[in-house]
Amino acid sequence: MKLKYVVFILVLWALGAGGCDKERKNHLSVPMEVIDFTTLEMRVLSEILDEKESEYVLLKSGNVKELLGRIDKMKVVDDKIYIADTRMRSLVVYDCMGNYLAQVGIRGQGPKEYVNLSDFDVDANGNVYVLDGRLNKMLQYNNDYECVEECMLPFEADILATLDNDSLLLGLSSWNRGDGAGHKIALVDKKGKIGQTYLDYDRFVDPAYWISNYTFADAGSQLAYNQTIDNNIYILSRKGELEKVFFIDFGKDNVPNQDKIDIETKLKNYDNYCLIRKILAVTDKYIIGFIWQHRQTKPFVIDYRLKKCYMGEAISDIDRRVGCGYSNGTIISYIDSENEELPDSVNQFVRNDGFVLKFSKLN
Image 1 (cartoon, one colour):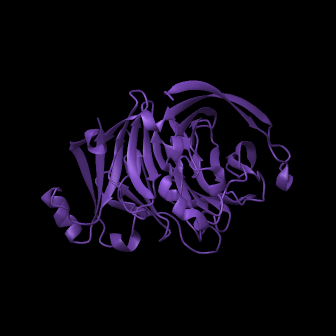
Image 2 (cartoon, helix red, strand yellow):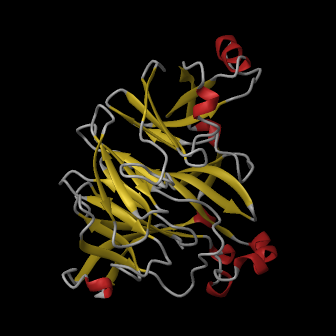
Image 3 (tube, helix red, strand yellow):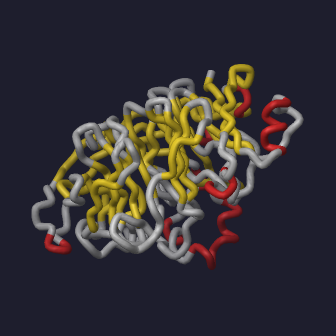
């Protein structure tokens, strides 16, 4: 099957669960671009990365290893670098030179505190939003990193993203039984009130086994949503409007519906499957992320215009170092150990327990 455009009709209806009877009923028609993975020209990932132009940012903080053990998510906004370690429940801010600026938020169960750092995002004004998926609340911090607002959410959510219209997108949990139950995405105001929902969960979901975490992948001009296991990548505007769908077809390696549930008992079957593990960004030219191919995690960049796929070598499923972020045409990784291919200054820094960010430009 060749890469082609088809028209995909998404029928999205709102459930009146949890008393949220004002959600709008929507019937959206958006284009779908089908990518036949088996016919893409396969190249190595290094061919598309301009390593000579790679830039390194040394995170200068005497106690960086106390603040960060790994990087689960990072964003670059207005020359500030925001880094989250969800396991350590830590959100740290640096400037573009790597100087430590602040730690956002206080851990705890009291007012204006969070127990679980599920996700975060930063709006155009420098306000930081933190989602606590354990306590089902959202906290807002101003650009001085002071908590100025918190709201209890009438639903359970996994991820969030800020928009340009003073609203947010929330990725609802598959087990959510509150407002918006049965839907994947909610457009909400800053008080957490749902105005619109997108996409329905089907019955082929296993909330007990997560192959990967997920996020609203931010490429600047647009957002992308994909939650494993799903071959669809949904593109949304900065106003939260669903605009397009990419469908990656892995052919005979697609996961059959019956194996998307009770995954733990069927893991051996995944030796024969290929699926999208996580999406980092979707631009006007590239789809950037990771696949899980025969139970091996591999970073990739698909040039969907030229029908090429640049594939990296397999990495450990728990390795967060490769491709921990994307910003303005660069893939961001982090370095915490020496490597003979790195500059001496970088090796010297990590030798002293430092963290280094690597920004690799796409050709």
